[in-house]
Structure formats: structure tokens, C-alpha cells
Image (cartoon, rainbow, N blue to C red; front, top):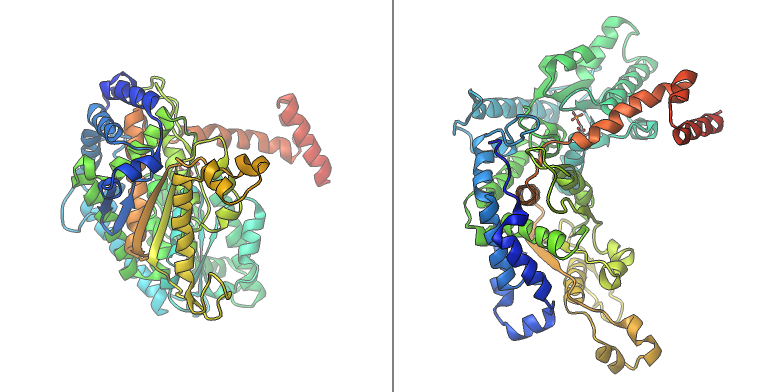
Length: 567
Ligand code: F6P
């Protein structure tokens, strides 16, 4: 499917949306006051998620035109092409089939002449069997001790998904097991993460789709060096080639699509878990890239995670567009970016366990949709790719919410919460005032979620401020304009399934936006130039004078200064 994208800006829906936007006087107070059905009409369910869009700058006319836009640009057709394995990643001539990682087993799906269902199930079974061996203690380190710490070495999609999910699902991690994640080539990362580890009970997973990423391979070599040095120092192995080989075989496994490079690194391909070029790095946490997770939470919980992804996939694939939550949320994002001038989008989980969710979404959304050309190589015809960012509530309330409430920028925000806390603590004492003795702290936490979305939507008028007795000179500083849009997402609990649903929701939102903009959301050529230049600059940093002379004046001066400071 390499035909040119429809130019969304030439559609009649785009013209309608432009008119709607010009005419729109946002008035969430008035809209709620005069329309008792607004909350229920704009609230939806997708798998276990309850999604309230009613506090958005959305009217029935806008929604109708957004849905027409989806029809006119062919969201449904492109979705179906993706699910069928068409090469919709045009610039890399690849299928895009992260959804195949979580399809029900036993439903053949032939892609490029290969039954990928068979391949997916076989690799999953291999990963699960390995996870069980580690969990049961059957897999041991070189001295016969069971594994206690798993260190995942990867970056980007080979790190952000696993670490986000590990933090989110921490209550499910088996006692006595833990994971750590090394990603940065700053040597501090590997140094700090290995400092207190016992090498005899540590298993490294080198996770890299390409097995050619500078950071990951450098960190893997540093980790191997640390392992061997520590084992020798502890008298756990002989300092011989055989001793070292045995140690690496028991303490290093790999996840990659490039098994030949895994072997060249010295890891036995029998201890490597594969995936495929039709899984993008940022869409890969549910492939063998999740091996650290499969070990720590166990295959059963990993299977529940996949079931959650699958439930959202099914919703995306089958729900009518007008009730299709990823479609609606993707279209709303287009509305804000292209018609209301939003440059950024906040994601604010009211769940401490989701504290890495925004970081994960930054790669998913921005590496996917930060593009200036369309999939046929022509320039984009509208703005694309807003900046995603966020921190968990309530921490953000005491940091950047000021700007969301009273700043000059429009910042649509997604509020995400679960009803059942992993740690249901009670404040037995209370504060003698608003917080009663015996207060459920999670309830207090979520009161903040609900209050913030109310404050953002409905604000506080000058008359309300005056009615509180505020001196006139201070009134304007205390006014809240309201009409600051939010989406509220509520789930029963942060189970593996709910986490899978949330991730799949944002995968599909990202997809919908990419289709409207006509871009290939599955390549990432924009990361290449910097990688190449780093390798060119490295000799200059290391002291090669001719390489230094080849740099521009600013870069040469910076490198010279660095070398001076470094001594
Ligand atoms: O540099 C960007 C990128 O290619 C991401 O797309 C990818 O997730 C990350 O690097 C890591 O790549 P790999 O898994 O091949 O090491």
C-alpha cells in the first residue's frame, strides 16, 4: 500500500473544522449547564477503560467533522491494511505487525509468505520456558546459584517499555527477584547499576533489535568486563578462556532480530530470543524485548498483559469510529494540534506506578509522528507531532500545573487513574480538619485528579474571586479562565491486562494521527544523523587533531574545552 496519502487539508471535513474552530467560543461551563447529556454522550468504554472526553473543547459538530475527516483520509482502510500485514512502513518497505504479537494463538496469519502466528507462538513458548527456568532456580549462574537480579541492557524501545512496565507491575514481581535497566552510554549508568550486585546471581539480558546500537553494545561490553572481573576476583571462575566462556554463557542472554550479531558478541544463539523486522522498536515491549518482565512477573502475568493489548486491538479493529476510543482520542489530538494551536500534550497518571509512562510515550508518539514528509516523500501539509510530556500527579501539581491552569498556552492533558490501589493505606490519624481520621489515602489522591480536571474545565471567574473577599488589585491574578481541555481515563486496577490496554490505546492513537497527517509513523530516519556524527566526532574527542580540525568552529571549541577540563 504505497499510494500517496490523502492530503487532509484538502478534504471538506478539514474546511468544516477550520470554520468550526473560527466560530468556536469555548464554554465548558455553559455547555455542561445547558446539556445534561454531555458527560454521558462523550464518555466511552474500551475494554476495561472508562474514557471521559466531555471536558474537551468538543462540540457535536466538531466531533461529526472529525469523524468525517477520519473517513476522508481512510483511517479504517489503513488500519485494516496494517492488521493484514501490508507494507505500510513504506520507507523501510516493511509490514507493521506489533498487533500480531498478541493475536490469539492458532489463527494463521501469512505475511510475506510466512505464517507468522507459528513464529510468534514458538518464540513466546521459548521465552516463557526460559522465564520459568530462571524463576524456578533451574537456570543458575556459573557457581550454581539461582538468579536474583536481571539487568536489562538496551535503549529506546529496548528499554523504555520494559522499564515502564516493570515499574508499573512491581506488585506482581516474584519475591527474591528484581530487575534493573541500563540504557545510557554515560558510564555512570552501568557503574551505579552494577555497584552493589553479586555477579554470581546476576543475569544480563542484552536487548537490541538491531544488535548494532552503540550504547547497548558498549554497555554490554562494560557489563561483561565487570562480570568476569568480579567473578575472577571472588574466585568463582578460573581466569581462562574456558572459564570466561562458561560465565558468559550462564550470565548473558540476548534479545534481537540479528542472531548472527548476537553470536559474534559471544552469546550462544541458543540463549537468544528473536523477533522480527515487522515489530518496530517502540512497539516491541510485548515481544521478547519483554523477557525481563516475563521473568520477573512470570509467564502467566505476561500472558495477561498480552490479553490486555489484544482487548484494545479488538476494540480498535471493530468498534464503530464514533465509539472507537483510540480513533476519537487521535482525532481530538489532531483537532488541538491543527485547529487550536496546541504544541504539546500532557500525560498525567494519578498512579505512582506509572511514573515512567510519559517517558515511554515520548518515544512512542514523537519518534512515530515527529515527521516533516509524508509517506510518499512529499512535504507534510500541516503541523504534525506534538510534544508529549508529563509526570505523575500529584507531583506535577506542585511543579508545572500553574502553567496549564493560567499560562498562555493550550495544553490538552490526559488524566489516568485506577480505582484499586496496589497499597491501600489509611491515614489513621487524619489532620483534624478536611482529612478525617481513617481516611483512605488513595481516595484523597483521586480527589486531586477530579478536582484538577474540574478546575481546568470550569475555572474561577472574577466575580467568584471577588466574592471571596479578594482585594480588587489581586483579582485578575486569581482568576482561572477554565476551558482547558482534559481527557479522564479510569481503570479498575493496574493489572497486567490494564497496562496492556493503556499501551495499545496510545499505540493506536499515534497511528490515527499519523494517518491523518499522511506520514509513515513506523520509521525513524531522524535519529540517524546524530548517530553518524557521534562516530565522526569521537576521534576528535579522543585526541585526533586532524579530526578536530575537521569540525566547525563551535564544535571544535567545545571539544577543546572538554579536553582541557577533562585534563
Ligand atoms: O535510535 C533510535 C532507535 O533506533 C529506536 O528506534 C530503537 O528503539 C532504539 O534506537 C534501540 O534500537 P535497538 O533495539 O536496535 O538497539
